[in-house]
Each structure stands twice: as C-alpha cells, then as structure tokens.
Picture 1 (cartoon, helix red, strand yellow):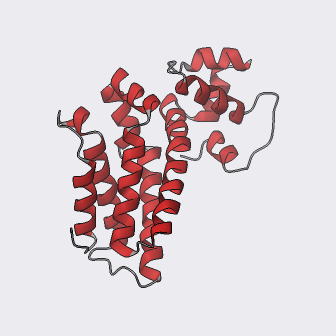
Picture 2 (tube, one colour):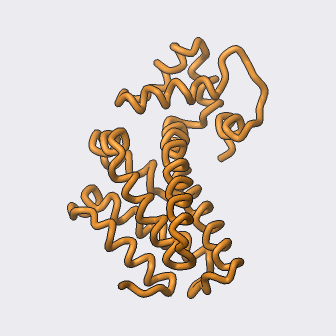
Length: 203
C-alpha cells in the first residue's frame, strides 16, 4: 500500500505544516523509547486530525512497519558491507549476510521489547503476508541474489523469487523461534540451512 508516509519516505510528496515525516519521526522516537504508539495521541501532539494522520500512514500497523523497516535496512546494509569486505561470494555471501542480519535483529533491545510486550501483534507486523517488513526483506534479498547470479557466483537451485521468500521465512522462524514455538533461536543453524538451500556446503 503506497501511503503518503511511504511516498514521503521515498522523497516524494508536498510539505504541509505538519508532515507525514514529522509523524514518522515522532512515532519512531517514541517506539525506540519503548512507548506505545497511539494514533490519537500522536495526531494531537502533531496538531493534526486523527483522520488526517490515518490518511498519511495508512494504519498503526503500517506505521510500525515503516519504523521497524527504518531500523532493519541499515542492519542489512551494514551486514552486506561487512561480508563483502571478507571476499565471500555466492551462497556463502548470502548466508553470511543473513546470519549477521539475524544477529542484529535478535540483539536489538527496542525490537525485543516490542515483541515481548505483545508477541502475537508484533509477529503480525513483522512476518505476515501483508507485512511491509516481510515484503521489503523479500524484495531486497531477491535483488541481492540476482546480483550474485548476474556476477556468476551463484546458480540458483530454485526460482529467485522462491529462494528470496523461503530464506526470509527461514530467518523469521529462527529469529523469533522463542515466540513462535518456544524454542531457543539458533541463528547459526538458520545460516547453515540458507547456505545449503543456495547450493553451498556446510564446513
């Protein structure tokens, strides 16, 4: 859903007295501080109507998705840069990036606090098919896999779209294992599964 907030985060949209970006920045600050995001209270603080704020952000869930994505994207970019510096390529590159990303997500206190406060609601935002977070993770991973394929470092054993989706789901299953199934997260095992899925060999 292309909300006005999403357009402004992409650098588009006209400025008003209070803008969707103002709403995003204020909500992000509150979320990082562990405060609950309430659309009515947020609208009042911004000096806009509740209906106006809903038009900007779409819904509370979409707003939270944008906030979480703004945290995860730098994690991904940093992981890619660090793994690229090691010279890893192909399946090893993707598995290593995924492992670093999972570790970063798993150890980020505001996200853990968000999940622990309401696990079912948090998982809906993080992992559902309508999730902004999940769909963007899939898109980003698909582009990364295509880059490895184009450079000749990876021969995909499955369609790239399928691989990207399955890898993201593996990551979700392991990172949030304690919430989903009551098991302890095993990030190293998730990375190994991703490596094998992409045709690599576990040492």
